[in-house]
Length: 139
Image (cartoon, rainbow, N blue to C red; front, side, top):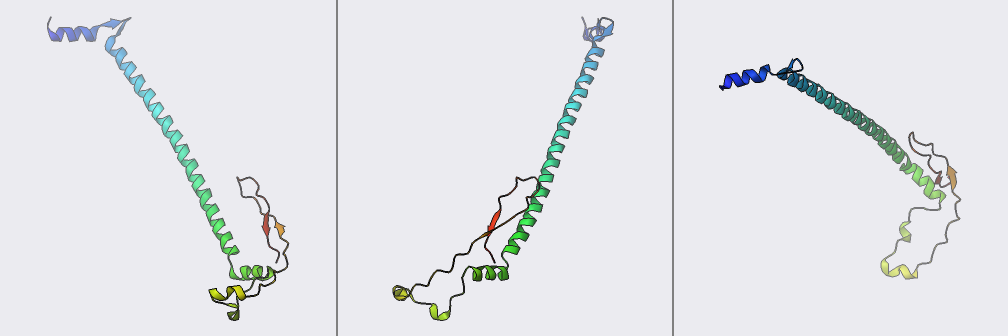
């Protein structure tokens, strides 16, 4: 048998009235359609995950801005000075400074009166469990 005849018989071979080559072609097209569907579904899943991560990043940036603003408010020198004076703290006078060797001879200063802390309600941030009340020194 010569080669063109074998190839011709292969392409002409029929299964239930359909040529074998057409059946294989339809199966290959179906496999490609299925693979494109699977790839698109995976891409959609990844896109949703990326969108969720971007939303979390935006939320965290907002929280960082709020924490920085709160830190700035809490670290204001006037506020800290008021709190330290209410707690009985004051800057050390120049006459009160001593050398290391003279520390044994210094008289101890009486402790200031105890300050009773008061509870301050802190509003909970969205998507977080409610925070415990913060304790701040009375002014």
